[in-house]
Image 1 (cartoon, rainbow, N blue to C red):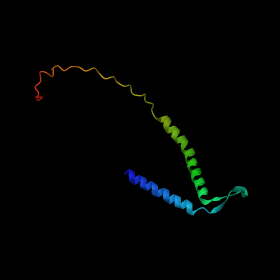
Image 2: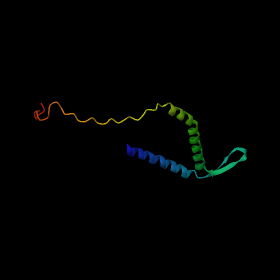
Image 3: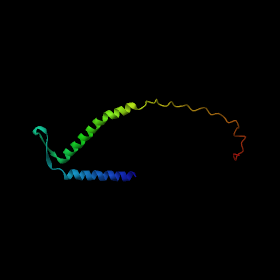
Image 4: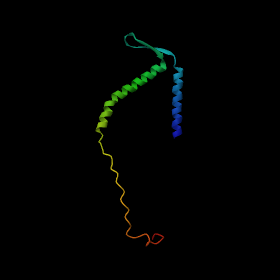
Length: 100
């Protein structure tokens, strides 16, 4: 299963790498107030992806913090020391060797 995951990750990487190599043409992005930005298409798509991820994290941050505050705080379990060995009422010398 581990090798299948590596193979899938490698396939996704090579597909994205081929996409980046095929989209190196410079494009012009028209922004507000007449501003323009010229950059390779892959760079513009990467910036749009990063902006979307950052916006998603900023929107979800209050919900994550609120959920984290609701979790009950439990103290760490105290380790119990092992009890001393108590000898059996019947010694092992008086038992028969076959255990019956």
